[in-house]
Length: 345
Image (cartoon, rainbow, N blue to C red; front, side):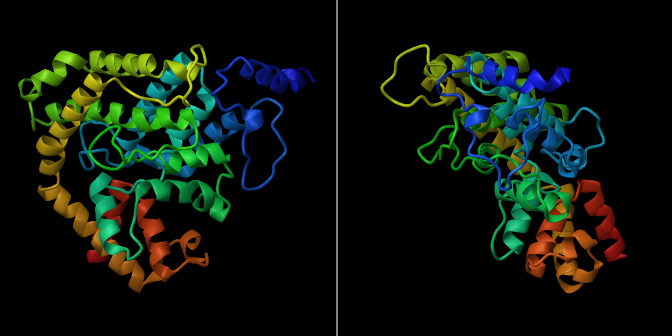
């Protein structure tokens, strides 16, 4: 058959990647062995599995910042994910790293996010005794919850990137920046805040919470005065500062994905501005209170009535509370509201 040589051709192409790139043939493998695809390399298969899974589709109706927005132009968890993937691919291509791996991690990084964004995440974390973090839930989705308990059987490298995409602290590259196993995953980790810093600013302006005049002038003077200028500045700076990742220059230390100090400080200033003027404001409104009440109501109801959950969440061997958390975390905003109204009614 004509397609028999496709995989070999793709593997040969990967030989031209940076010596620091992860090549598919050197992957640490999957949880369960599978026959290789004749036309796709391993990270391509992972990307495709993520795109076609149910959790990915539901991101369309999950909050980024503004809960269940009516306006079609507000960012959702799905459009955020697509932007992270595009920024990640641009950086990976420029640095001659593995685009397929980078894209798969980016597309899967928020699969476990709750309805109502970080409001829903914080509420589940408060309610569930073992705590809740969306990056850990994203890993649980791909390892276990999808395909009726079979998971997507992704490669180690993609699963590592999904688990380790979240940052701690308020600095984009602070001292607690736990590096994932690959440079490709590091790219996704830094592309995530690049995406949300910029699109959340646009949404906040659209919502009337802030105006262009409110934005910190010092940060804009470095990053740019428009969305596209800021993205371009950040991406170009990361490429310049991470050029050792291409293998084109000699370096005694292992390359890392990083920013220059002045650009990093400007990006952090914008991020801190968002927390002070947007995120904390959004946490104290009627829609947010409704979201918290909804998550609490669902959590208490299903813990008392586990038989009311769908079969997929009732038949596994986890504790009832764990099953309830999995069910709620998978809900979209509107579905959670509609179910809560039926229970409360």
